[in-house]
Amino acid sequence: MTEFSGENNADAFCAVHSFVSMELNDISQTVIGAAIEIHKQLGPGLLESVYVATLTYDLQLLGLKAEMQVPLPVVYKEVLMEVGFRVDILVNDKVIVEVKSVEALAPVHYSQLLTYLRLADKRLGLLINFNSDVLKNGIHRVVNKF
Image (cartoon, rainbow, N blue to C red; front, side, top):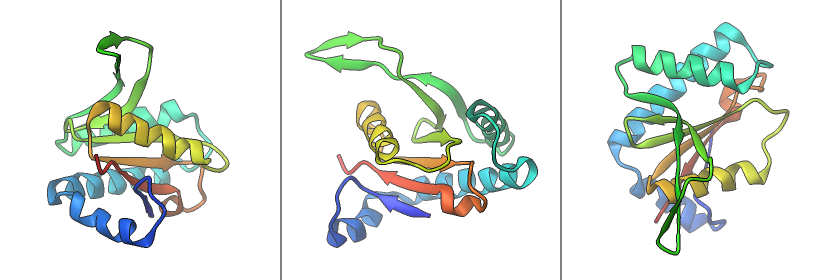
């Protein structure tokens, strides 16, 4: 699992840990555990929508508030614009989970999640690519340092 904070220097990378609360880390660990279990059961290669639905279901079974396809409005020059952005999964109103099922993650996937975090005023996101032979290689934490 890698962590991305929108900055490239080592000091910023190390400082990221102080920005993420223990509660967010607990949520993150629960999401990752559930994702690994789903990957073990279903394997790679399915549509993203399958992974979003099963992960949301499992997180709810684990007692978390997990909502899928949460609308994310954009405020531009003090005008609210409903432009169709949707967060794959919002967990406990705190962590954004962006699910992918692609051959390889591209830099734009990290940027997309970081933008969602900024627009939603959230600190932590998980980018999970289920199309990985070993899921731990497809899990990435993205931190919005505000």
